[in-house]
Image 1 (tube, rainbow, N blue to C red):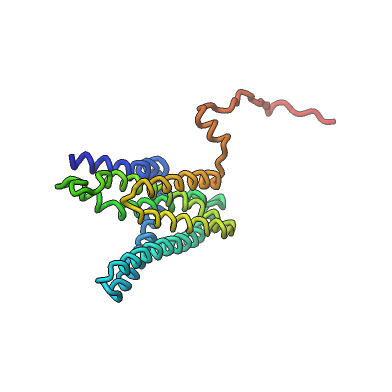
Image 2 (cartoon, rainbow, N blue to C red):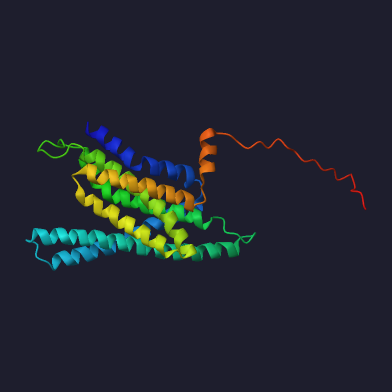
Length: 265
């Protein structure tokens, strides 16, 4: 039973991310490099946030439960802000790399576009964030023990898996929106990305009332996904074409003979 819960929750949490990596990233070496480097940037942001939280806890009264809860909320907010700061730093780095790749290429164009780098960097932030948020939970799901035997919610593992899946997708969407906003200097978009990230992180403090956290987070995920889709250049016409599986009729063929000299006036 423990193995079934482990593989089931792992599939829910990282199934979509694994599919995206295999279908859109794994075949391109540059995208793999961007993916790994993005994970490193997120890890550095987590390290700094952990140090700030650790020092604040050491300097505070550990017997005050209310203060410790407040420091936990403070640490989560600092972690979100640092993640977005390092996302901006990663954008600057990739921008410089994009200019360098364009200079050394034969046709003067970079082999990977900024939108592709935005998508891959967001996916890398999401995957590494999901791994750190759910890895201990997955380890405990193997057993021994039964969730809910002491009156706790029996849906702890499954809801954690769905929350992780939403977090991975949200980071991917945030990456696309964030990079586009930085490129076009739309500061209000940057503010909305940071605000939605803070809101999503804050909603997790409502657990174990999972209906109060899971439903709003998935609503935010859906809205953010639509926003990222249109930001990346998508349209309803593309969606309808994809769902109908129809291709445009390209039956018209223009023929030109090099042996036939055009008439002169």
